[in-house]
Image (tube, rainbow, N blue to C red):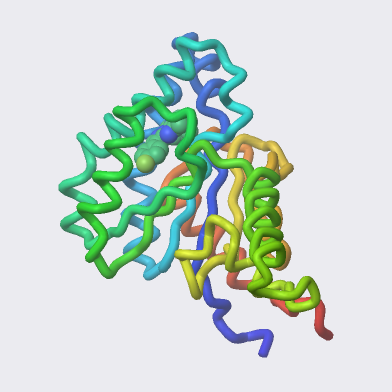
Length: 239
Ligand code: V07
């Protein structure tokens, strides 16, 4: 049991520390975001190589809207730049793109580009590259509760039929089935908190933290953290 190689189907990463990476180098913040975007390529290709089924990246949260508008505008351009630069390689590697988040408030061009990327890669059968974009987990849960309440109101179901599976099926991870819940969460840059990320889905996940800033996070760091994770024993609360 304890020697079984633990499955790693769904890996989630909170990509933190781009601003601090830039500050340390006396560079403007946007250069940290740019470097962080480029780093996604290497990490995603490695995750794909390792046979991971879903890689979820936390790139933007609803709270990020509070940042200075120049920076928000820059962040909203990153999906456009990302797919301009990396779409051919995603295709070559059979990667399927998914976006998890709320599409309201997004600039039109950004929204279009993400929808186009989803469509272009829809028939790919390799790893799902799942961007948490304009995502917040409490909003996700509120949204699920509203959808379920409507079914009760319309007489489709009774309140007593609501169970964990039904809640899960109404979250934004529903289309990642059967890999809705991350096996492992990595957060870079030394912060050890969830910041409103996948609160429901991370209930039984393992967590790994590193002090490295996201732009400095390497394939080697990833491999080491995964090896560390695979040495752990997962019990799902059982003895
Ligand atoms: C962002 C670069 C990575 C580090 C985190 C801060 C900045 C890629 C995307 C992206 C998002 C959706 C999508 C394709 C790409 C992105 C934001 C920030 C907001 F469909 N990088 N990146 N989005 N950074």
